[in-house]
Length: 65
Length: 467
Image 1 (cartoon, rainbow over the protein chains, first blue to last red):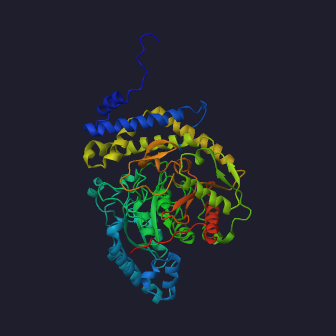
Image 2 (cartoon, rainbow over the protein chains, first blue to last red):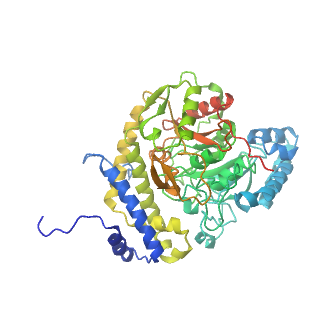
């Protein structure tokens, strides 16, 4: 796709972008540990997303009116 | 004599109270004295409800004098993880922040039901902050300490529950289990722990963590006590929207039915990797005792663990977002930074995790058409040292805090009922647990298996020795 941005995962950039979106501030130590946990989460997401699912698969929680 | 009674089961204490061999007040006094003597070393209790306990005990003695039915747990002391509401106390949930909350105006339903069965509440127990923890360490109240080795972790997040029961302070404690927080301390402290089917026991009056994964249940030193506590908490409570409309069928009457006819297999694949020899050896021992030579695979277990991990981060991050904004510096930093990261995760991931959850549930239920009971390690190894940050599994260095529950997490992900049962290897000074897993709503079967193993001497939960 012409002009597309890089799809390389940059956890530092994600944390720095989302802290203000969430209304959060972080000390340098907290920022560093948040980045560690974001990387761990990304590894779990990689394992999860590698499992094929169908469009018709329903999520587990079912709302009952 | 009364002090020695505290080393016995709740069932034995209740029998002694009912027979008049000892009064409920004497038992309560002995328990309070023992808590005073041992809690400094164990870090188990954060609140002791002495006045309430003595009043309840005196009411039991008065009821006995009038010839009234005292209930199956008459006079047996118990305590609860401090995320259960106790009237008159702020519900800490292990957090400094929560101490500013006003006192609870009523007891959690589980507490009320145990007391209705005659048990005597003696206090609230230490836990990992907001239950986001597998170590039993608390940044504000200090660590709960493993009674079998005070330099070792209890496991968490129901760490005080593990310390209180293994330390002989109470015969029964309540905990909560979102990803393994009853089963991990049961394994590390050498106790029987019961995580029921998701939706079985009411969570009303219990501080939440991950609503779609939260369970409550008991820890005890005997299977009969585990069953009695579970039976006492059964029953419909419309205030918990996740509670299923299932009959309140007690399991105690069927404990004696044994394992004949049950199809039992051990889990291979994911559950046979990333563990120390002690954990896999414990499963071997239990499988041999049950003559279970079949091995089955729970396909997708690793992805299930990852999905539970992500759902926990997201729901936890959402639950605490406002507190993270306003009281960030008051959190345990280890908890806070996981929650902040959780609040940042893409919605697409968690929706995917919930879709996979239904798929994994269907595949696992299909497995239960051919098997009644599954066996798996409860923890990757015995209790790590307090303060230990990492351990090495399969050659990979991992963080202790999130990874002690790697074998418990895929099972609670789909709400399966599990009993953790403790083993002691000859010469070892620390126990390790095995998970006995059943299909949803078949708590009766897994408790029968646990009871048979206990009677055969394969699993046992002694009170720790104190010098």
